[in-house]
Amino acid sequence: MYVLGIETSCDETGVAIYHSEKGLISDVLYSQVAMHSEYGGVVPELASRDHIRRVIPLIKQCLAHGHLSTSDINGIAYTAGPGLMGALLVGATTARSLAWTWQVPAIAVHHMEGHLLAPMLEENPPAFPFVALLISGGHTLLVRVDGIGQYHTLGESLDDAAGEAFDKTAKMLDLGYPGGPKVSALAELGQPRFVFPRPMTDRPGLDFSFSGLKTFTLNTFHNSDKTEQDKADIAFAFQTAVSETLTIKCRRALQQTGLKRLVIAGGVSANKQIRAALLDMTAKEQATVHFPRLKFCTDNGAMIAYAGCQRLLAGQHESLEIFAKPRWALEQLSPI
Ligand code: KG4
Ligand code: ZN
Image: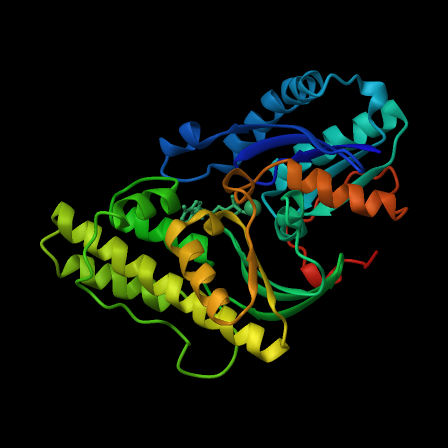
């Protein structure tokens, strides 16, 4: 079964084709980063308009890369939420219209389920059950995963998401957008001079909070001379605090569930220091850790095509109605 996947939830138009037996056939992406960077962040209306411009040419390009024609496609998967309403509607309308025209089923995919299953596209996919740490621009979630659609939230951020904290720190340090990669690059030049708090690690539980860390970062910056080295040292201290906080919570989640497999996904999982810290921790816990390849950590069409394919294979799909869900809890998904 060939499944076309369409991702348009935020600032990346991602399109991919996944085959149920042959695996990933092709994937293409257009990032709107250059357009939004002028404004210091994502402008929703511009994002929607740009998705409209890109999505059809990308679908054509994706089919051409895979040496496929439209009649080869057996199903369509699209991100229906969570995300920006206008942006989501572009993907939903495109997917539903093509599915109707081509007379194939279409399935609405939860963006975070896409992230969570992205490591399944790698050579050594994790077996169920496992613990997943989902760290993106809008979410920080620790989830027990017993199968596709069988999600139990163990902990989540009570305020800012991890990616949001990176983005806000980048703004404070005047690094621009997108924040995560910029903070991370600057942190490599930093020295271990400051020690920042590891929020909510001194009490039991698996929830996160990053807004206090953000304020601490801001105050440290204001009280510094604001030199380039100060900025680098602050970026390093911030990144180390996030990395250690995530590591402590993941270790606790593995110990609490008794599971020995950890999956890390979402944009922040591209961070080198965080990947290294979690590799180190899981080795000590005699557990394994599974990451998506770097380009599938951030938004992409491949993860949506994969997740949709699994659900279509199980016979799931929706009626012709076009809908998008800007807010959508992972736990509301049905198992397959
Ligand atoms: O998953 P994603 O592409 O989009 C959402 O679903 O939100 O995640 C984007 C987030 C942004 O906050 C971005 O700053 C962060 O991931 N990010 C990173 C890195 N690359 C992207 N954060 C830290 N280090 C990185 N290397
Ligand atoms: Zn995402």
